[in-house]
Length: 205
Image (cartoon, rainbow, N blue to C red):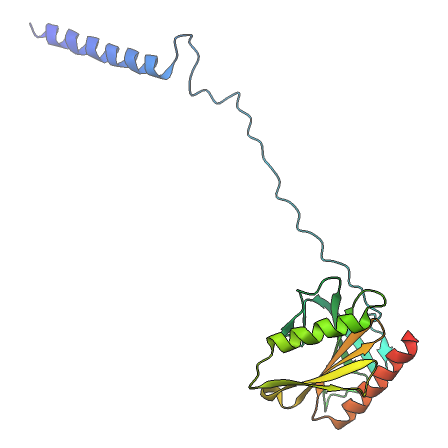
């Protein structure tokens, strides 16, 4: 009598295994979960685009009126403040220049020249578009522009009360614009900037 329940248990167990086998396999005997024929396609991550080549009339290590170009950076801003990305067909290069006569005792603040290259024969239009971007973005309480005819075809100083010792000057020289950022406290630097502007005007003539 005790063997009979054991037989029933064995039959139930075999039935359970059969049901599990039927569930995992279709009627043709093909395994539903067979992954051996699946091909996993691995797509390589796209390579990041190369940065655009810097287009500038300056070169690294070039000497210019007592200064040396030490670095260049393509950007969409000038003075690290005014965004010019809304202006089409221009490129902006920030050039960092260092005085050649610097010594260990005294290190001068670098001179930055932002070079804005625009379409041929449209220098005045490029200047106007840049000036309009200044007007749209500056703070009326702390920042002003002071237009002057002292340099190149057109020019203006950008004044920022938060940077009392820093001068910002933008000059149109034929088709291109040049923005100068320099330390006001070094009085000789202003004369250096004027010589650089005159040199750029001579080169463009």
